[in-house]
Amino acid sequence: MASDEELAGQLADGEEAALAQLLHRYEQRLYGFLSRQTGGRDVDDIYQETWLRVVRAAPSFDPAKRFSTWLFQIAVNLCRDWHRRQRPVADTDPDTIPVEGVSDARLDAGRLLQRLSPEQREVLILRFYGDNTEAETAEILGIPVGTVKSRTHAALSKLSTVVEADR
Image 1 (cartoon, rainbow, N blue to C red):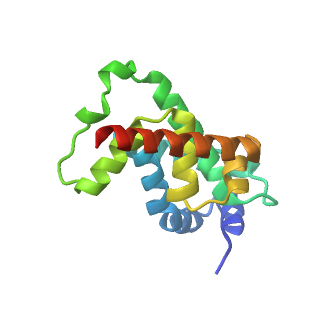
Image 2 (image 1 turned 90 degrees about the vertical axis):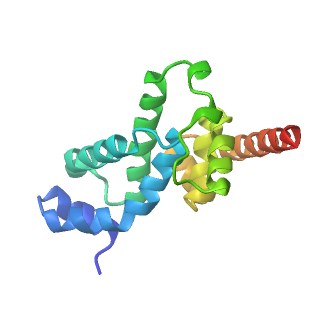
């Protein structure tokens, strides 16, 4: 079985089967990341744009780096762009997120994540939902490991405060 990095090289050479394999490997993980980052809004559009950028930039991919890190760097940048284009926070209250077909636990987690700053949210999602190490998270976000640690600590402290206040 080819590694992700080998598949990225094949994709750069125009092999559609490589893209299909990468899509299959990362579909759930990437979709989940995007969903948590956006509160479930515009996920399909951002997902497609992420893969379009992967295809377009495949020839410039450095096979010495991890494909997953590169993929999530693209996704993080698209999410940041998406957040900049959204209405002010007052118009996107976490308590007004559509909830059809969503379990209570998922709904609570989604609402809590939306109460964090975008920087805190992306660190938590990459670390705990994406199962990335601190070093991988730092590389994806282009920040020092110490910043990942401090944002994680700040986010968990804020979530603790919010949960206590809601009780």
